Length: 163
Image (cartoon, rainbow, N blue to C red; front, top):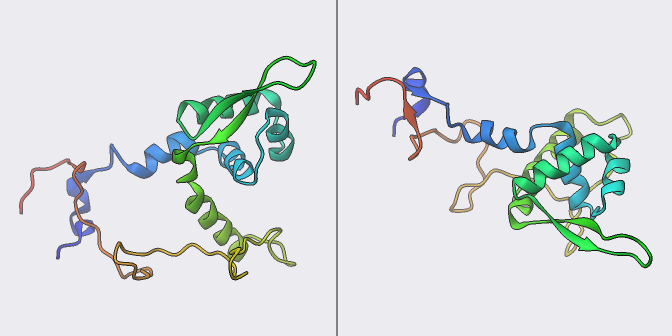
């Protein structure tokens, strides 16, 4: 079992999955809009107000998140009003939930004010706090230092493979 990190200079991260994810959700406002979507926010004005950003920034982020497939627009119309759009989370957007939960968990531990976190997420069935844990595909919890990095199918080698 060879850890790919031992030959770090022989590969490129030109197609890094983390960098590509940040291209989609790498702004503070994009992550906060997704937080609000998970909390049930659906309307443009509510996103702008709850995230605390102006309408142009809200429009830009919602457009980007919709184009990236994390949200989709659904028309609605209130009596006597023009047709407007609500934003619904897609399956691709729902897959971002563990990332946001991990950020909240880290923030609760390392960035919360002295009284503690502003919200606590609990499991409906038992009432225990929800936490994100790294697990292997067999279900074992994996802590820092208990994993290794190997080449994936998309790895770009910057030098010829000497193995």
